[in-house]
Amino acid sequence: MGHGYLAKGVLLLVLVLSCMLQIVHSTFGTTQSGQLVKSYYDASCPKAEQIVRTIVTKAVKKDPRAAASLVRLFFHDCFVSGCDGSVLLDNSTAMVSEKGARPNVNTLRGFGIIEDIKEALEKECCNTVSCADILAIAARDSVVQTGGPHYDVLLGRRDNTIANYSGANEVLPSPKFNVTTLTQKFIAVGLTKEDMVTLSGAHTIGKSHCTSVTTRLFNQSGTAKPDPAIPSRLLEKLQRKCPNDPTDLKTTLVLDDVTPETFDNQYYKNLLARQGILYSDQILADTDGSNLELVKLYAADQNMFFDAFVKSMTKMGNISPLTGSNGEIRKICHRVNGYRD
Ligand code: HEM
Ligand SMILES: *[C@@H]1O[C@H](CO)[C@@H](O)[C@H](O)[C@H]1NC(C)=O
Ligand SMILES: *[C@@H]1O[C@H](CO)[C@@H](O)[C@H](O)[C@H]1NC(C)=O
Ligand SMILES: *[C@@H]1O[C@H](CO)[C@@H](O)[C@H](O)[C@H]1NC(C)=O
Ligand SMILES: *[C@@H]1O[C@H](CO)[C@@H](O)[C@H](O)[C@H]1NC(C)=O
Image 1 (cartoon, protein in one colour):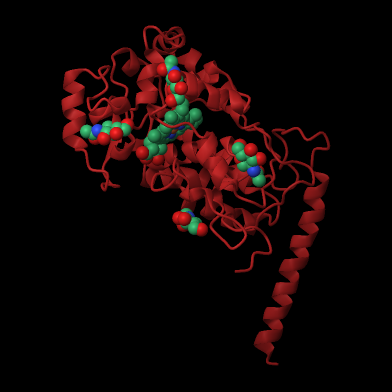
Image 2 (image 1 turned 30 degrees about the horizontal axis):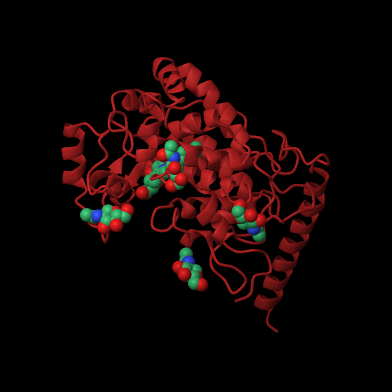
């Protein structure tokens, strides 16, 4: 055996040992109560949040839409068997990835950014920061980066060792749903109708693929007609951008055409002007619906929206997290530890 191998062997041993020491360290940092806390990584990885912020900031500067994609990624993680990083797992012999589920396939983005963050965090403090917590911090930083409110993220989630493909198909709301079914999806994960209206305000940033709106533009509820709630000028514009082509997986529409890259209350103003893009957006402002009052409130008062958004995001971030000795801290976010093909 040459010196090169010996040196590499020693280096590996040092890395593994230092990592083991960090495991001991981070074990002391766990909350026994199973509650998420702001200070979770204060001792075990004090630079964790700073590292996430740096990478999110860079990603959003390069592609403003990355902010929206990261917020949506967190939402799609939390609704499916809790905020457990399950959305990040790839297909393997052991599981079917949530990435292929209807609400996610061809539309969910931002996975590469999460992996970049994970890699940086493994270098800084290995085996310590969960992918589920990275999603929560990255979502907050994305909101801040686009002009939204800053808030403390509660931490201490651990990563699931299994994905939930059928869960993803079942629990995530569809843009074709009516208010009743939309609300049911939020109630099912312990959120309220008000949380639904508030969190939908995230559609103040980001884009939708044409495929998520073509039903509304051409064949609402099987009527072979557009949704009558769309004003004719908006309809013409949307139909021009999105001809009825189910094979087009590329063309997109901004969800807030007035301030598409700014996290503000413009989404609600748009709904009052009947400029909502998704069917599930515009029905929140139905005159006969019970959500209109909240839409009006947020449209009139951005601070009110921001305060409520922070509360609802924190609630969503608390959907059945794995804590204590449940789950694991993944080393890479798209594979469980000990993965073998
Ligand atoms: C009320 C139920 C909801 C429905 C039916 C819904 C549906 C959708 C759909 C269909 C898209 C476009 C996907 C595409 O075609 O690319 C989208 C995008 C988005 N959603 Fe939602 N959503 C809902 C709630 C939420 C919540 C709770 C959040 C986060 C708090 C959120 C954040 C986003 C963001 C930021 C985007 C833009 C993503 C990007 O540009 O990559 N949505 N949503
Ligand atoms: C995962 O594998 C299933 C078949 O087992 C396939 O239908 C699906 O498209 C795959 N998902 C991804 C994201 O590649
Ligand atoms: C998958 O999600 C469904 C629907 O929420 C749930 O009933 C089921 O327990 C989940 N399965 C796993 C393995 O987490
Ligand atoms: C909402 O949609 C569900 C499922 O498609 C349907 O059963 C229900 O009648 C609809 N409710 C209203 C008020 O349209
Ligand atoms: C409209 O959608 C319904 C199903 O909801 C389908 O049966 C019908 O063929 C569609 N019509 C057109 C013109 O695409």
